[in-house]
Amino acid sequence: GTDDDEDPDEQLITPTIFTETPIIGLAKNAESVVNNGDGTHTVNYLFTLENFGNTSLSDLNVIDDVITQFSGMNPTSFTATDGTLTANSSWNGTSSSNVLASGQSLAIGATGNVSISFVVTPGATASIGNQAQAQGTSPQGLNTADNSTDGIDPDGTDDDEDPDEQLITPTIFENKSIGNKVWYDIDGDGILD
Image (cartoon, rainbow, N blue to C red; front, side):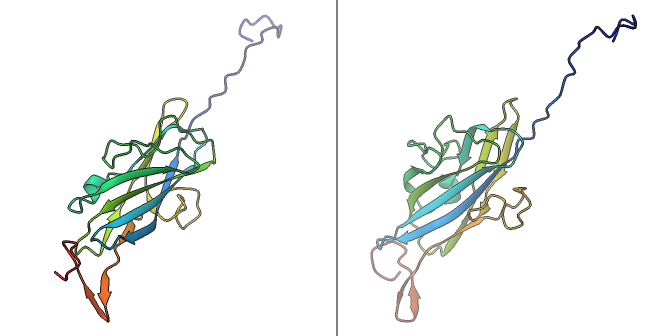
């Protein structure tokens, strides 16, 4: 021990230091893009989160700034829908609005999902890229974040248990056609513009 009395009477506990490594991953999939026939399209995305770290994660956030990323398309009718995670019924598509309800968490190795939908008027735009971000906090207060990758697997396509892929999710708008011609109804009045 520490008293040099040749008697092993000390019973000091050896501290074990646990180093947290919080890692969150996010995948974003365009589940459907529906042409509403009036110049608008309803866009539906599925978000899949996964905890790749060695500690649980709480205070989960999924931020998708639809207002900015779809600027010029007049995004409206924002809806967040529960999956295995609970959606925020007040989600409004801004950079400060969490898709998830407060109090969401993920255990080590766990996955969870939630969906959003909104309506846009794409005009002549045939496609647009979109990306979201997931955030979480470890029990010791360490933060982790990940920009989404396209698809339903937060690990991407390489199966290395590291969410390092950040492929932007394409959103493709169906154009109307008559015969073998494509036409655009920019103002949504049903007449070729």
